[in-house]
Length: 305
Ligand SMILES: CC(C)(COP(=O)(O)OP(=O)(O)OC[C@H]1O[C@@H](n2cnc3c(N)ncnc32)[C@H](O)[C@@H]1OP(=O)(O)O)[C@@H](O)C(=O)NCCC(=O)NCCS
Image (cartoon, rainbow, N blue to C red):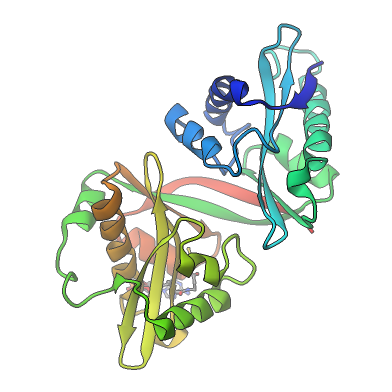
């Protein structure tokens, strides 16, 4: 129904409009994207080497962009993330499901032939728990469904109170500096707590994936660290880990607070902070809710290795 072709830079505004419209519906929502046009534009233009390389679109008979799959690849880790597929089927179409799946298959066929995916052996899709089309698509293509994760957000007065509290400014966590021993311990803690995740310990510490890192140290070295980055509309907490012997004493909370304050001070305040927590990670949920974070949505990752 739609013809599939490689994306060009000129498709970007139409792609942003399409994604923003579909993101508002949990049945089409994809976890890699936010919900406003500004967020989606930022997420797409951040892709390297540029958005159009690796992205494929489906266009209707008038040349309008009606479907999209964009790709982010990390050759170092042999992994890639598929942003989509997004397929806009006309309302009331008698074979809507079939059109969605046929178009999504065609997008995937063309995208996986891209040179960007040469040597990649590990693919991931990520969507709202209610995006059943994505779940079925993932299963048909042999992706295994992972555990659900929950997006928690912090807004309004609760966020302001985290950002302005100055109690830990002199004794609490500090921004990671060049000290090799501290950096090595952060890498080690990251690899122990988050093996095989989207950013390795080396990448987090070096900032090559855009992370800002804060670290809490004690007499015996690193107690914990938190890493995150600033997006168009939010401060994002990507990783937080505390040495297993030092947990349940408030270190995690103080690391998250320090990270949010550092991100806001260096790159500007946003109206929301967010974190993704694996379903069943009760300690993490407890830590974030104690800071005022509340449940925003539930997502599922699908992985093909
Ligand atoms: C999540 C983590 C960073 C928390 O660090 P921490 O220093 O223990 O954090 P805090 O002490 O600030 O808060 C932890 C809270 O969880 C509670 N908790 C601990 N284990 C729990 C469990 N199994 N079920 C429910 N609550 C639990 C603690 O009692 C504490 O709450 P309280 O202060 O109200 O009593 C730490 O557990 C960790 O490193 N986990 C492994 C990595 C990880 O999962 N990171 C989070 C990714 S989103």
